[in-house]
Length: 90
Image (cartoon, rainbow, N blue to C red):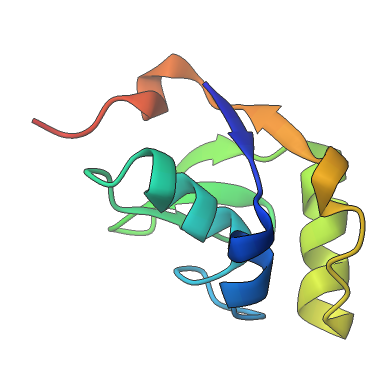
């Protein structure tokens, strides 16, 4: 499943927030049944365990967004979420 930001994700995102950053909002929008958090370099479950390391280009964008509030270039950013993370919990 491809994860792509929307303008709404960027506008409503909160800098430095694992739960409310633009990428976390995008994940929740696509998989509302999963408790997935986004750190500066990975996707974590609700217990804080790392489930997936983010691609470098996403990590670089998150660092700029969190440090300087610069969300430029989001339109071209996306990544493929592994299928094991795509399904909601039963």
